[in-house]
Every structure is written in C-alpha cells, then in structure tokens.
Amino acid sequence: MYTGFFGLSEQPFSISPNPKYLYMSYRHKEALAHLNHGLGDSGGFVLLTGEVGTGKTTVSRCMLDQLSDSTEVAFILNPTLSEIELLGTICDEFRIRYKKSDATLKLLTDKIKNRLLKNHANGKNTILIIDEAQHLKTEVLEQLRLLTNLETNTKKLLQIILIGQPELQALLKRQELRQLAQRITARYHLLPLTVQEIALYLQHRLRVAGCERPIFDPKAITLIHQTTKGIPRLVNLLADRCLMGAYATQSPFVNKKIVTRAASEILAFETEPKKNNPWKWLPIPISLILIIVAGLAWYTWQETPQVNAQPIVEQPAKKQTVDQPVENQTDK
Image 1 (cartoon, helix red, strand yellow):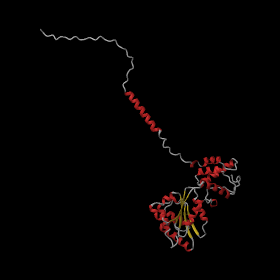
Image 2 (cartoon, rainbow, N blue to C red):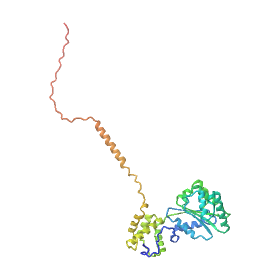
Image 3 (cartoon, rainbow, N blue to C red):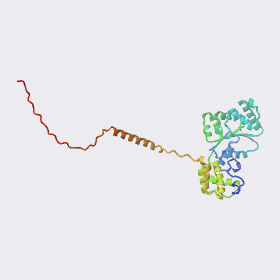
Image 4 (cartoon, helix red, strand yellow):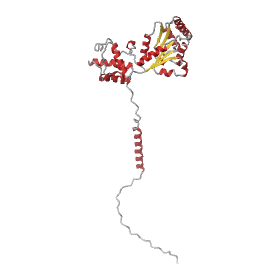
C-alpha cells in the first residue's frame, strides 16, 4: 500500500527471517562469529540464546547461507518430541529411509550413525540445528549427546546447534545434563538493539528495499526504542504500521506523533504492568482502626451512668429537733 509512496520495491519491515535484510549489528556479528567458530572441526554443541524476537533464527539462516555445498543440514523447528520422535524427525530431515512400524531407538540411532560415517567418508560435514530448544526434554537432550559420541581423533561427526530463549541456559545447568554442557564449544546470548543501532537498522532495511533517504526522524526513533525495548521483531511491527500511518496522512516522514498512534494500535499488549504500590492497602487498616476506636467510644458511652441535668433548687432548712434524754423509769 505504501511502497510506491515511499519509493520502495517491497515492504522493508516484514517479520520473516529474510537473511538479505539482516542488519549486522555488533552483537549479530559476534553471534555469527561464535556460530562459525563452534562449527569448527572439534565442535560438538553450539548454543545461541536470546529473548523472543532478537533475531536468533535470522542469524542462523545467515550462517546457513555461508555453508559450503559439502555440508548436510537438518533443521528442526518443533522440538517438543519424545526420544524416538526426535530421532525419527532427524532421519526424515536427512532423508534416511526406515520402516516406521519397526522404528526403535536402536534402529534409528544406527541409521543416523551410518549416515554420519558415510558423510565423513565422502568429505561432508553434518549439522543438526534445533530451534526453540528450550522445549527439549532432559532425556531427549541426553539422547542428542549420545549421537555426538561418534567421532574421529580430531572431529565430531555430528555438530548440533541449539537455539532458544534464556530458559535454555537454565535447562543446561541441571546436574543430569552436565556432560552435555561440557561439550558446548561456543555459546552466545543475543541482546536487543541500542537506540543508535535501531537508527541504523531502520535505514538499512529501507535501503535494501530501495529507499535511500531517511524517513524516521530522531525523536521517532527514540520513541521506537523506548516502546519496543530494542527487540527487532517489535521494531519491524511498529515501523511497518508507522509507514502506513504516514501514508494515510500523506506525510513524507514518520514523526513522534505517528509512532505514538501506531504503538497504541499494535503494541498495547507490550505495555508494562503497573508497578505494585506498597501503600495502596494502607487505607484499609486505617479504616479498621477508626471503626474500632469509634466502636469502643460508643460502647464506653453506653456503659457510663447518665446523670439527669435537672436544675438544683435550694430547699428551706428544716428545724432540727433535739431529742431530750429520757430518764430510765423504774417500777417503784
């Protein structure tokens, strides 16, 4: 809708993990370097973590584009599987044929190991990438570790990249997974973008889509960073709506007002909850104390004898009579 208005060849802020739109910030470059380093000859497991929407999947896709043709890759997007289901999925990704009715852990493990040996004999590398790996069960992770036991004197025949949210780090700290944790040769945690990086990020995506001039003014960029906390996926959602808003008002630039309106439309669910006010319950005990005090005062008033406030009238003084002593009379 707005592409022609801004001279764009396509929408620049799609949330699809398109590697050509990947803005290589300092953190993304480090993440990609860690992935490539971890996939060296001696690598076993590589760990990439980050908050939702920070660009983990996009970095992994960029890494895949750099792999040579001599690398066979299996990509698992839904790891909420049992041990046998995961091994079956790996076989499906590597196009390893097996009878599903006869599938057992031993059969599938043997099939995978035979493929690894065959690839090694043909000079091929084998990589398994698991996205959303924080959902993996402990026993499934242990099964993955067992797959990496097949190795030569200098090389692991299977290299595994685990991509997930920060919960994955906590999962790998469990005592029963310490052997797997020791095999992680490279790990990186991807952080959100800074406000300076967001300015470069927006301009980069606009340039890739065919627009060379800046569209977002500095105050708009600052507000975008504050609203999205630097999460690229949220930046894309908000920037796309901002371009629609600018087009609707025929504005050649996106200003702070447009960002505010767009954020209220699509990021209302991202607003932070109100902070807990420790004083908000204070009126309740005060009210109870006042009620108790008032009740005691009323009770005390009811129990106190009431004195009729009658006017005091002085009575005339009565004559005092003095009893005369009576002599004892005796019978004479």
